[in-house]
Image (cartoon, rainbow, N blue to C red; front, side):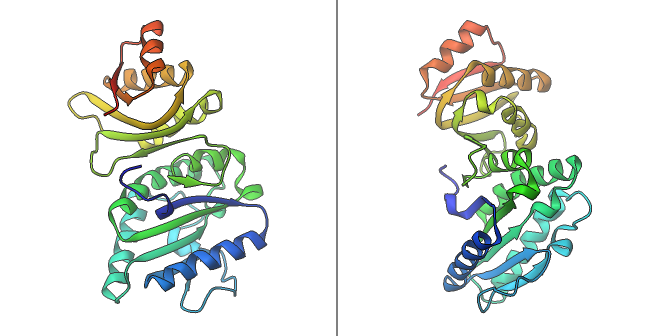
Length: 258
């Protein structure tokens, strides 16, 4: 994606604590070497953080036990980033072990909406973050719904990425493959990212989209209908225009990706 280096915002899944130890230490150490303030957010101080990295309680950072307030959480990280800069750091780097924040459907929905918002903030701010998910604790559903909102992930559950463009509120950035595996995830991601219409249109910048099937286009049509807008899909995939015509979709306009 043109506005965010993949390493700036990562959804990373793991199966055992050894994987967490290796990745978190190397990730935080890289931030320290770059002059960043480095935070590890978890339930408890793991005791193995690199010298200079700070432990922050996930309960206090994200108000665990209740659904995250997406806008308030992004605002809190904006304040923390400014504080890091004021203290002489080059930015803020956060490794957050997040599965404890996803106990209920309401908590998962709120956290996913927060991830969509904070992704836009990270794109324009000196902040980097890893959302780490223990697979057994988070569950397959949560992994898929969160992974597709990040520009980089090791999760195989999401074969596409949908994100808001921080420089264009009416634009969403779409990449990867919208195949049968996206049939459940894509409509959910649309609701979480929720780009704001401009002049009755929502633009989907799909330069990085490699495949789209009829199911995804039907989801996009219904999404546009509910919001009484036109979905403009900018893509180089010639099959998209053929499918729109074949299905007689009236809420989607295909434009060639420049």
